Image (tube, rainbow, N blue to C red; front, side, top):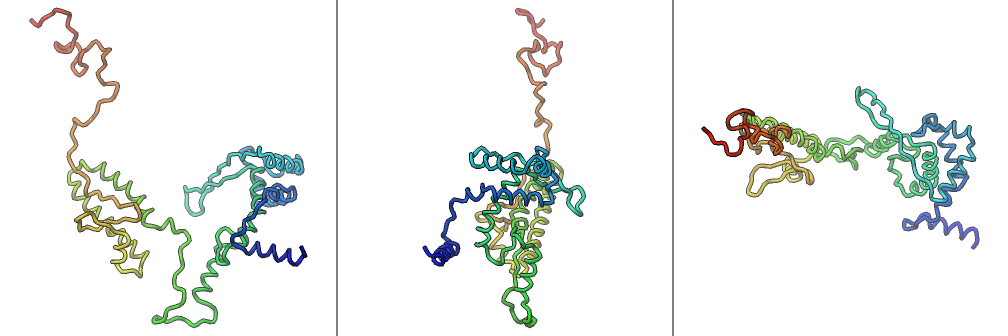
Amino acid sequence: MAPDRATQAVRAKLESTSYVFEKLWGLVTDIRNLRIALDRVRRNRGARTGGVDRVTVRQVLDSGGERFLADVRAELRSGAFRPMPVRQVLIPKAGKPGKFWPLGIPTVKDRVIQAAMKNILEPIFEAGFYPTSYGFRPGRSVHGAIAQLKTLLLPRGMKRWGTAEKPPFSWAIEGDIKGCTLENRLRVANPVLRGWANFYKHAWGAKRVFVSIDDHVWWTVLRWLRKKHHRSPNWQIYAQYTWRKPRGRMKRWRDGTTKLVSISSTRVCPFHIGWQKPPLFASTSMESPVRNERRTPGSARGIRKPRGATRG
């Protein structure tokens, strides 16, 4: 095949969305790729930190880098490689005293293999990403995403939009969508509400307090949804996030399969002493000489009577 035709064939395969890359394992385990991977790990800021085996990159290079790579390649080619556990370190969060975020530190061998896989797979996936994708991509950051949004919302040279005019783009999607949903907030609030109801259901006037709490929580959720959907009328919010019992009139909050707990329906009643259960060591035992341990040993009805004896 001529060079021009071969180049065109390869370019057509790369531009085809249905093309499947094969035989990549030989590229991953190539000794040249492993050398590049080890160099990337060496230049990383965490090169001086060891994993669970406490081995650093400097120690690996001092003991022989080529021999280390040859052993890694042999394990990968034979299928004997097994990753080591990740060492976890808690890093304090800036500006949040007492809060930490976990950091996983693999061993040097695992880091080299991960870098080798990244060297081969990253160009393949990068070719299919959209130009407006900024999440976890090389050479891109959140600052670039903000600049892209600014360009789309207000292009250079475009006039300022008035109140009666509508720009082509007016919305920016929040990055962490999962954390700001009503379903997540209901999952956090429901255990707290259930705990309060189970603890205070025997208190005097608990029913009236539970009704007040339900009313407060209901309006708090509505105010939060109004801020989240500030352009939507109330009837749209109710249609999306509320439900009713059969033949019921009261709207109840729901997002997906998670429903807000209503503690006003909790049964309120006084606590009875008879509900307390005795501990296991106080239960009646058949091995005891006393027939009924609830009676005082030595009393007329609590001791064991001789056979044939009668009450006189």
